[in-house]
Length: 337
Image 1 (cartoon, one colour):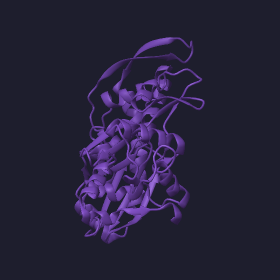
Image 2 (cartoon, helix red, strand yellow):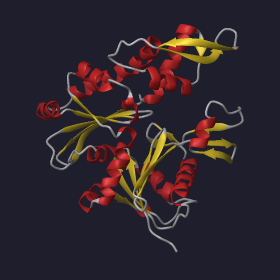
Image 3 (tube, helix red, strand yellow):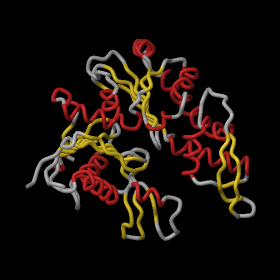
């Protein structure tokens, strides 16, 4: 028997988050696909396990880039694969609420529509919610009765600043700096200081274990990489100082861009933001003391969300479950694109 389900979907650059109303649960899986030519080898977490370990004829990549769908066909396969794992049987005619970036073109909207109504998934109704609105709702901020709130989302590949007031996003900016750039910066610092090449997965592990801001605690970890001179595997002890130096290069860029962004805000709204505090969310905000570091740089207080990378999908969950909040979801039909 066919049934109708409702999904809240956040197609992240690193992790795909899906809320199933039928199961009343949120599921997370890596948004990656491993393929050899036109043949799909692995999807999701299995594909991520192959990342930076696969032979040259196997490509492992994410179908998303900087918050946008980069490969329509692969993204549909990744979403279909995850929905099958959640509900086992996919019915046609589900309602799909997508968390989407701001100011999308008609072509970019069509991409989201085709992900939900392509070859594998069909006859689904598509609704789009702007990501800053979903984040605000998840963190308990009322977008409608609002004199001025600032939402900052530091994601896997990009950081977005948005100002919400009186039910509208009056100004927004996205910069191409996120967790992935921090991982690459750590790899660059290790290569420069130790003449050792390590993968971004190793860089991410070092970031999670030793990455700290405003904390001078000394630490070290042993890693294995490729010697830049001999080309042979080598073991090296990496200092937390080197890891933090790589992270700070990216965080300082984010803080500088944020400070410039704040200077463009009208004084009345800036006063309200200073009074309320800047709302900080995103997967990369798991970095210890990042809120204190940004506060010392910008002079504004920060409210760090404990939802991290699930912020947008939690906002979609609230919208799906509350009729009054559904006004923030825009229905998209193919003929109107």
